[in-house]
Image (cartoon, rainbow, N blue to C red; front, side):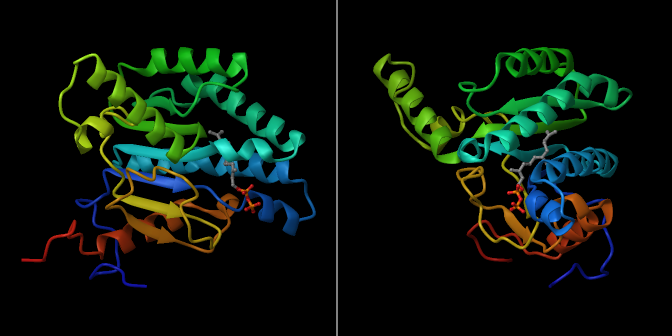
Length: 243
Ligand code: FPP
């Protein structure tokens, strides 16, 4: 693995936007003879610590993959537990984040989500919308392909109605759930899997990828810093050449 020159974190080169695929909750639980739901519960504790760590490091945007459009196919008990954890998190968000400048945004499809979760999303987004510091973005019932399909159909409608005349990258970006949010600089996926699983597929075009073997519940601030140090050692060329 190539780290940055000094192999220590450069506080002046923190990625503005980190995206995380929090993978490995199920395996973490199975290794301990626990139910998969216990793995998710432990994973949500890790998430709280990592939100805090990103905030302290000065990350501006953190996007996490909490529930994909494909996750509905998991056993009902597991889906119910994930919804319960999300509901608990959203209900207590302001109390937990008190004193920290963290704004919460939820991206993904609203349909299929339980009414009580939708209510909490509305409430917490409204209550934190004035905050600037860290934008904590939760991808919930999220699918990257569907996001693009939705954006393209909005483009088509806006062309038909004469609102726009040109179809370009900007026209699509502006109609994604992440409109106004810069693309991730760094994607972290835990648990040793090396794929993006329909996560932010448009937005990750020039993102640096970091895969590590640690299962999400075991992921700590130390691992986050290792990922950032590795990112700091990369040369980002965005398709150009290095001068
Ligand atoms: C992937 O691990 C993880 C998920 C599908 C859910 C992630 C959710 C959380 C960490 C907690 C809830 C989030 C909030 C915002 C409170 P996996 O189950 O696929 O693990 P496996 O590959 O080992 O089976």
